[in-house]
Amino acid sequence: MSELIGPKSQEFIKILESLIRGRRSIRKYKNLPVPKELIDKIIEAGFWAPSGKNLQNWRFFVVTGAKREAYLEYSKKSWLHLKDSLKVKLKPSLYEFTERFFFTLGEAPVIIFCYSLNDPNEKHLTSIGSVYMAVQNMNLMAQALGLGTCPMGAPLEIKDDVNHFIGEENVKGLQLLCGLTIGWPDHQPPGPPRQIEGRVTYLSSLN
Ligand SMILES: Cc1cc2nc3c(=O)[nH]c(=O)nc-3n(C[C@H](O)[C@H](O)[C@H](O)COP(=O)(O)O)c2cc1C
Image 1 (cartoon, rainbow, N blue to C red):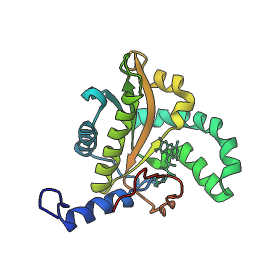
Image 2: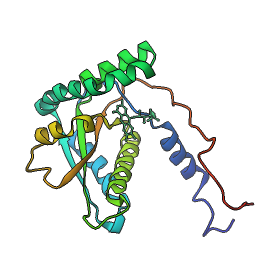
Image 3: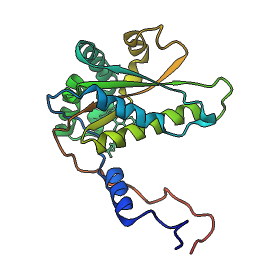
Image 4: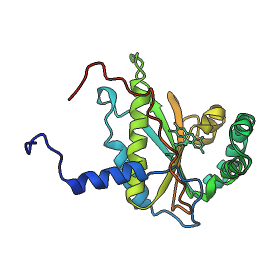
């Protein structure tokens, strides 16, 4: 392959692959703070995501310290909305682990609530998609820094409460998309296997 269209280098690809494949949702963290400059670096990685019409419509609210402690009551409430469906889905040990995660957020010292400022003219959910792209950049930067993250849709179960918690004036016109816990990992969960069957269709044959 020519230099122009070929891969950057085997080393570059290996590092990228190990980041992408090695990232796990972390639900147990060490009791150690995350320095602000690392949080800033993670958020900055989010800013470099692509966004529909380049609107950069993500809005992030960083919750730490006493405010994070206060959020635990909300997290417990979101568990009430999910526990019955999880009880039938998860084996007992995983159910208990997940319950503990919701009650403590795995001791994560940082939660970032990720919101979208939706373009009123949009028809294709591009604003929402753009924010999730930013979140994945943040996941990967955290991973590169040795930190762990867990994106959480659970706050959506109680989105009015979360909006109130963040401050109605702060979130006016915004849509809550997820919480993102961040901290120093204290476990190494196995990667859930990825399904390939039926996920991809090539409409023409490629050689
Ligand atoms: C949009 C989104 C919402 C999620 N919500 C939750 C959640 O509320 N609680 C949780 O423990 N994990 C949550 N997860 C993490 C998934 O369970 C996890 O990504 C999946 O099991 C695959 O595991 P992995 O991230 O380690 O590869 C969420 C992930 C995404 C992308």
